[in-house]
Length: 331
Length: 305
Image 1 (cartoon, chains in turn cyan, brown):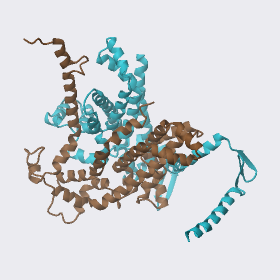
Image 2 (cartoon, helix red, strand yellow):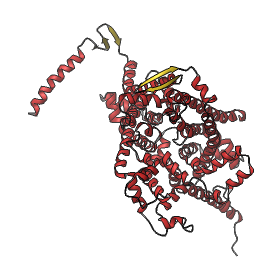
Image 3 (tube, rainbow over the protein chains, first blue to last red):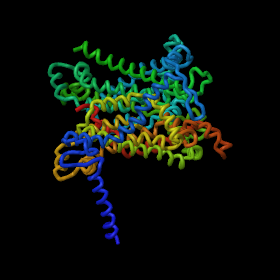
Image 4 (cartoon, each protein chain N blue to C red):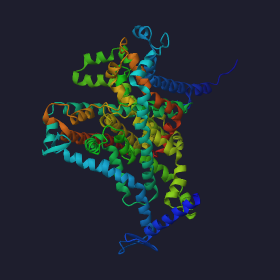
């Protein structure tokens, strides 16, 4: 029964095989592919490899075209238009760069939120990186239970999410207990002008959240520290360098590339974190929650998202540039 | 009288290099313990509060250790979150994208590592750019596209981009797989080829089995990141199909609309217990698989070879 079934199937399969090998569209003869019986392509090893490689990445390429490249151009296009929702269809009127102008000159919220974001990032990223470096250095010492420490300091990466952090912040669990006990915040508020005091106050309010962003960076830097050759330290010790000097002269230069990686990672992850006020604002604009027609809708929202991207890249360039400028002047 | 060797004592306490002496060690352990405690303080506080009853909550003398373990909070949160059903849906929009994204990115990483694909440098540049471009740039066109396809407010809106390798942080996973496959010895592939395996057989029989750790690491990170993602899912999944995270986000309104809790008032103990219920699945995964998370970072090859 089964055998006869396979016999029947195999006849069909043979026919399909024959059709695939002997058709008008594609044909193989010796080492040549023949397309439409007149285009002849010699199959070199390189070409075959390229083609096989292409077959592996085809899914990704299709996805990239549909879900990334097309959206990139479409949102860039939208950012120059005023888009109105007319049922399911989009009604567009060309705006030129008015959307971008409105973001800075007309919109009462965007600039304020963006400046707040920039300040926050510029303050928080160095704190995160330095903290990560300190923890990585501590764990890298000759201590017992390295695995346990790594596990503890990596834990926040697993649970950090908008709602969970929001819940913790609502209950004041992201600030250090001693900061509250000693009224440090009130002292700062009394002694500085509000322009300086407010960012500091916000920083203290969510200091643990800032440190929680360091989970992955700690491991990145730790991996870098472990790759540094012990013998370099020993040689420098013979030459009379103490721990302090060898940190600045050996450790830091060797992990500098990883610090750059950590900076990029920190900036990106803080920028796309779902409690970030800029991206919340961009979404609200997109969903049309403002009543002012000029700063509403898809077009304006797309313009804001591009501005946001540019600011983000500038911040990354600023940090990485600062890091590498110091290297050049030193050497 | 015993003669105390001064230098020996000094070495014991201070070490040759301070950090290998007794005092140096003690300082390091103390620092780590203090920072570790501060680091985990929100979690510990959350857990301590979640098992407090009303009396303990208002009692200022009860800080860390409640007078009794009170599990009623968890019961309430369980009902408000509709935990069983929501958990299943959350797992659907977490596990499925994670698995599919891992497969697609592994194919991509394998191709970049093993074949001389034309324009490899450009591909890498594109991949890095997709990492830097914030989701806000894609958001609107994707929203319009999904709306036209009629898959907005279904799980497909999350699953589809992941299937095609355009999900959350796909770029990172591609790099992980690239690094991992690149370090596999080429001789293995060549011997398979001599034995008559074609490229796909080599990938399935040799590439994949040897890359087990990379697959596990990528899958775990993907799972955790999808679990914690709310910005995109709140937009694409919408208001009908809530994930656990989104339910927590709207906990107050969820609480007020839940029937049969009339005599209860919403307090922080209930909120904390809900938060714990939300992080419980990933926390369990972490406890069991923490080795793969922590060592996975080394495997990304991000540290340079």
